[in-house]
Length: 230
Image 1 (cartoon, rainbow, N blue to C red):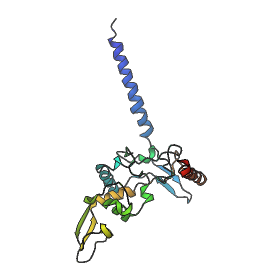
Image 2: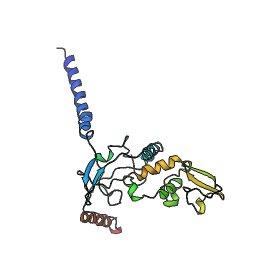
Image 3: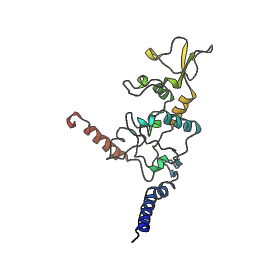
Image 4: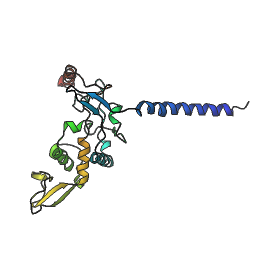
């Protein structure tokens, strides 16, 4: 008996089933996601998420090219699956809808540094981000993050004085006398991207925890981290 046709049909069915399960069904579930339009407590309709502005989109490409994704994640785990929310990395867990405008989605591969899902709200200061990129020791003493001085230009101070966007550096990090450190366009774009990372808007599938629940979670995390429990 010739089993060739049966073998061919079996292989075809296996491949087709895999394609349906791994490609078609996820695309139907995730590809149809749209921004949520909810009315907040003030009666204002809030659309979330929204596409990032052009400068932030350019910054996303710089973020990817510098390999930031290898040390920072962008995925807050739900309560009970880690202490991400208790650490203040996000106010709620992240879900698929959070990433519908991100191409590619930069979930990250490790957490050498903190999660950046909600860094735009945790640290909105442009000056802080620029100083941190120039030399992380300025803002976070002991940080293992490498400095990115090539994102800045050291140039003589003009006749009209320091530029408005020159970094305010002092001590060992200060520029030589008569010079200033100014961020390049790439540095500004990267900071625009980091400041656009905000996921505090509630979603139907991921509501913000109630105040009582949040306080209980923080108390539990504190108890877990006491010396007696180590």
